[in-house]
Image 1 (tube, rainbow, N blue to C red):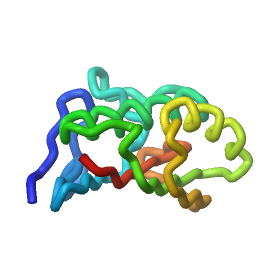
Image 2 (image 1 turned 120 degrees about the vertical axis):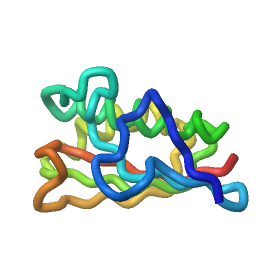
Image 3 (image 1 turned 30 degrees about the vertical axis):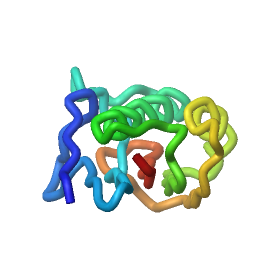
Image 4 (image 1 turned 180 degrees about the vertical axis):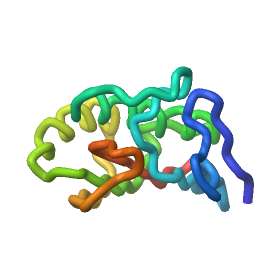
Length: 122
């Protein structure tokens, strides 16, 4: 197993890693919409979904992979009413249409509106 570390993604805010590579697979931790350079969180579901995707992409890149190699994502929304707007942004990044679960949750870290985790191959 190799721990993934991406400078272009937020550092872990708890006792976990940004991701791991094992046996040719990459597993990212859930990424919320923290802008790594500033620590700020953008306003609105579209901007937050975009930042989540950028953060996932940075971790995939650190593992020598990319969005076209993602085979599964799990997406968390604070409000299912944001589903359509979230999907518009998500579709711009995950063009290979990986398998996906998308659920509404009561609350997400730092009060964000969405979170994305991914499994990819190298």
